[in-house]
Amino acid sequence: MSRCHLCILGVDDVFGTVALVGATGAVGRIMRQLLEEREFQAENFRFLASARSAGSTITFRGREYTVEPLTKEAFAGVDLVISTTPDDVAAEFLPAAVDAGAIVIDESGYWRMKEGVALVIPEVNPEAALNAKGIIASPNCSTTQMVVALKPLHDAARVKRVIVSTYQATSGAGVQGQEDLVAGSKAFLEGQPYEYKVFKHPIAFNCIPQIGGPKEQGYTSEEMKMVYETRKILGDESILVNPTCVRVPVSNCHSETITVETERPISVEEAHKLFASFPGITVVDDLANGAYPLPHTCDGSDMVFVGRIRKDLSSPNGLSFWCVSDNLRKGAATNAVQIAELLAQHH
Image 1 (cartoon, rainbow, N blue to C red):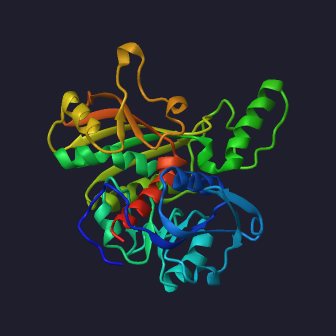
Image 2: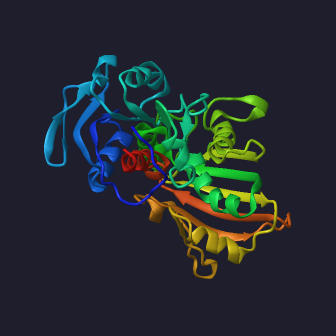
């Protein structure tokens, strides 16, 4: 595949065969929907999944497809793979796709920080995808929306330090996480016991200040992803990130409070203009009239929403804001499909 200079408008060229791995899962279903809605062009599509789902049928663009079992041999003749699987599955099967000659876009966490693997948000570092070989990783959902919001500030005044607290929806723990929220809430209101399948503590009418396993210095794996992935995507190892990740009783859309310290002061007015002019960001910021991003209103959108933009009272070079995005779409499926579109433009 030859790569030309970055162009982000229009998809005229097509891949031969595109395979969607994990096609029947929650993110896989959204990917199928996006590939239809955005009219992604390919000569042929194939849909792969675990043995449990193999043999079932799905409808895509008015045609019925049989879901194929995920095997290492299944990638023969495939040009592009878009994959959403657990880490262990990505580690086992995706190298076979690369060996078969495919370009791979991976949603799992396994490949993100591997040396030589591009970690890409198309609005932020598209050149990394265009220069990549083999596997291209899509970032963690909480990282993605934050880095999209950081990018215009970083370009204007270089971000030095970030303090972020996340309020992450149960959909980030999969379909069963959402079911735990609904069933757990119903049981709580009825005064009945409920055995949670995903969460170690009740999520109904509760907050859980742990996402992922313990890592260094009392931080969790989810929090450290935000540290390392932010630096890799922005190409700046000096950026300091102090994260706290919390699971909250919201079905879908992650929210974040973000405080940024930059090399020079950025006024609220300048920040508004920077955010509003950046692709992929929508500003909703009218405190007096109660207008700001909410998970309820951002659900189903591919945008990153920013509001509550204000000066940091504790730092002359600080700026604080509120950020909400659909973690299943921009935080996962949409970002992967946008990477595929970027590659198609240069195919």
